[in-house]
Image 1 (cartoon, rainbow, N blue to C red):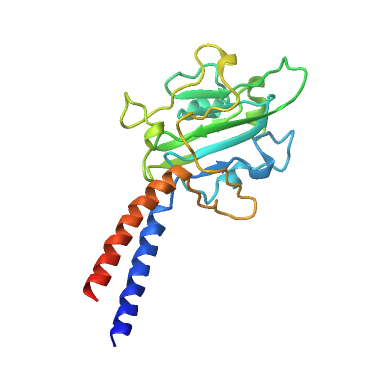
Image 2: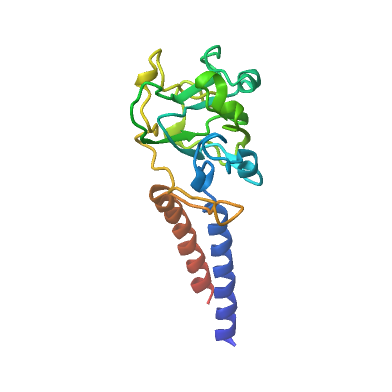
Length: 233
């Protein structure tokens, strides 16, 4: 009889632990834009369809978009719908549009470029390639997403001067060449890259540092529950 009671209590303990972990491990995600096709226009890769790629995905603060492209394409992010529809970065305002990397028409060779863009503001966010008078944008290299609050921004991505983190910090300061190929905060251990070629939804991933924190919190609950179980028995 006592063994049966013990087994029942242990079963409930395991259920509580699993429920607790399932809620905590839903962490920040990386989304590879275009999956294996990358970030290109329809003239270069006719198969790309970014509206289809965006469909059924849930984007939240702290997630990253990974753009795999080359030095002949740019990555421009804006919160301004007019700028997005015009496919033009030149007349954009600094506080609502960021060109993370620009194309280099003068380059004599093509080389791959990877840009990691964090999602820092709730609401509609637009992306497009803005060079060559908007030609690439007009040929399919653009998409829009809606960013939800989720679990909020991780501390490493928060702007100390703005608790709500309502706008990104531009990597460009009047000089297009100052933008590096990959922009990721050095202090942020973002989750591993997740491609969605084989599934409609990206796999959940969690960084080692976040996992260690979560594990520490969860283990403390485990010890409390164990103490209750064995204390009662």
